[in-house]
Image (cartoon, rainbow, N blue to C red; front, side, top):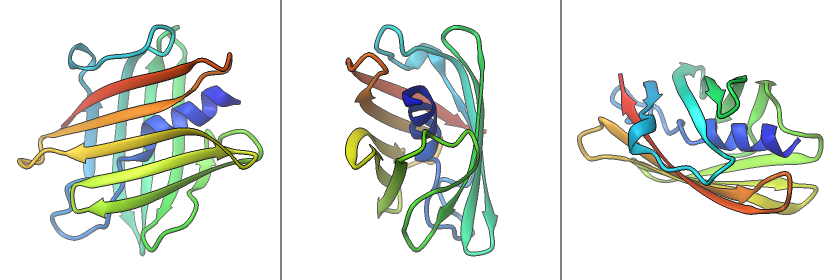
Length: 155
């Protein structure tokens, strides 16, 4: 259940307020060589596609975890705020993920499980719009803290 929440956090910050030139819209692929993972939290591949869907953003993320197992998550991000609405890869029962756009290029999010914070993500898109750096912090299934720095490239 924590692992699903972590996958949700990993895909989470690919969203933002959409305009014709929104820095989060499009396809993002993880550059594993430039990323840093806490041992046991490695990811072999990760990509996300962000598209407009009415007043919200549809996010679809796929990848392969460190053990070689496929991961997948799909959710709607309410542009006016609120909890994410998952259609695939939903976190455990009692889990909620909230995101807040800090500015045009930065999104912060927090994940809770049964009212207790279990993770956070700070995402920033570079000024040229080509790189997305995400710092994902949380607690794994064994209660151990982790911090992953993920570097994505805009396709």
